[in-house]
Amino acid sequence: MRATFRKHERLTGRDRVKAVATTGKAVHETPFRLVGLLMPLDTPAPAQVAFAVPKRHLRLAVQRNRTRRLMREAYRLNKERWYAQLRAADRQCAWLFVFQGDSVPKWADTHEKITRSVDRWLLQHVARR
Image (cartoon, rainbow, N blue to C red; front, side, top):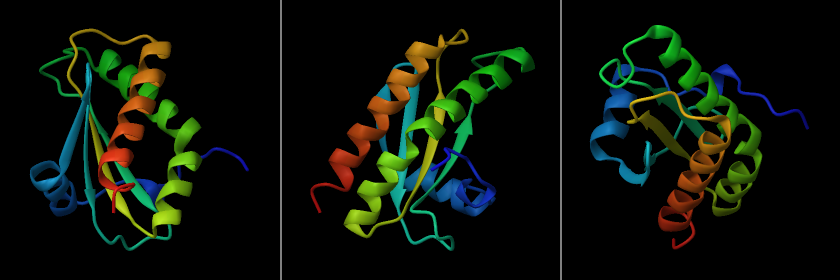
């Protein structure tokens, strides 16, 4: 199966993003923070995700876009494994990845830390239920 990142897998809507950001449970893998919330979604995908790179941390739009692109790619390449875990538990969730570093991360670091943060979040919030 092709690894894609489709529109129905994106977390959109001010209210939904705000709910995840304020009431979600967080996992930190410096320089990334993953905030997730188990909630019913109006999509067939087991998870919806959003990526945030604040201007406060990276001033140049080029750097913010590059960081966001790296985060999306790391997620896209590993999402089927996480989707399988969520489907097995019959759960849906929304995730918000927030970058909190001061320079554009390398691809290897981004891939490793995004993967590790989602694995930790799933272990803490889905596996024990």
